[in-house]
Image 1 (cartoon, one colour):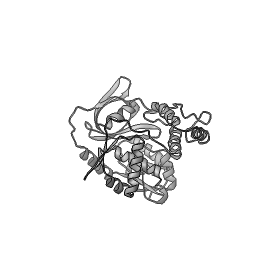
Image 2 (cartoon, rainbow, N blue to C red; image 1 turned 45 degrees about the horizontal axis):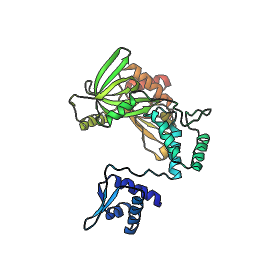
Image 3 (cartoon, helix red, strand yellow; image 1 turned 60 degrees about the horizontal axis):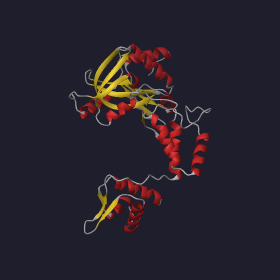
Image 4 (cartoon, rainbow, N blue to C red; image 1 turned 120 degrees about the vertical axis):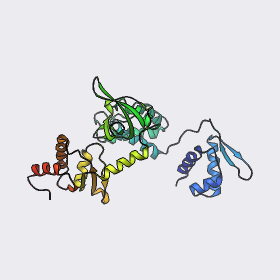
Length: 321
């Protein structure tokens, strides 16, 4: 590990502690006492707020409510951050409106040579969904649903939420839910929740949610019980499908929300997923039949409901056995 990288890691390590010793630094970073002392001295010289305590059991104290030295990035780290912005600039990301100020700060800490290199990187690299006629990193090309930032801010504090689900203008439903995940699928933000009133797991489009807040109701089930319900449901799935490499590529291009593909072969050459289908929902069965045919000839069924099997055999003109 390079010295600059090690010093940055030590700064992050001690920043999360009120007190530490040289021995702890030695143990954590596998370095000699002399190296640890030199690194600590360099950190102090940078202005990191440390005081020393002499005697047996002594060490260093981190002063609270003090300004820390500015974060230092290596040229490679700066490029890595910059490239991550380029790769995602046309994505519907949360907190997208903060990108301009963050980018300006990144460019501001770079030297003139580094700034020239970053500008050249922006001209050279094109990622999916990038407009080649206007690859401007500072342009806010897209915006996530208005409720997304609020949901994220609430969920990191408490996952038991009250949501207003607006099915159509003027028609809304108040829901008491436990939030499991917020994810992007097929260019659409969704939340996976457990609906306490309906006693089921649901996937809700974020753009249809309003007035999210932490619930004031008592939870009917604990988080552990909710996760157990999900595990039991996955085990009893009536559709279990194996995919080859072609199927995996097509799965990544398009798949229903909430389906998780587990890779079973080296280099993502094979995978498996499971779903619990409502066999009384003819529209859902027709959708899954179309999608499974889209995945290609390498699809192999470990388990499939008879209702879906009949639809597929009718469309294929042959038996799936």
